[in-house]
Amino acid sequence: MITTIGIVAGEIWHHLDKHGEATVSDLVKGIDKPRDTVLMSLGWLAREGHVILQDINGDYKACLRKND
Image (cartoon, rainbow, N blue to C red):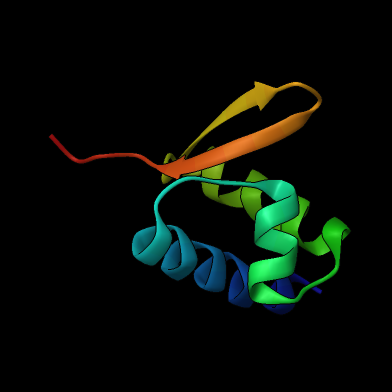
């Protein structure tokens, strides 16, 4: 499972890099992966400091953290 989470994390990173910010719902549709896997992968990316998450009306919006 950890391999799958890592692969999906990479797909999320590429999606956000190409499209900018996205909600979890948009990511699930955009990369065509199960919601639970997307959430676990977002958690990994957030813990590693690669994404910023914001609660927007019950859905989370993710964007890549900019390297200053």
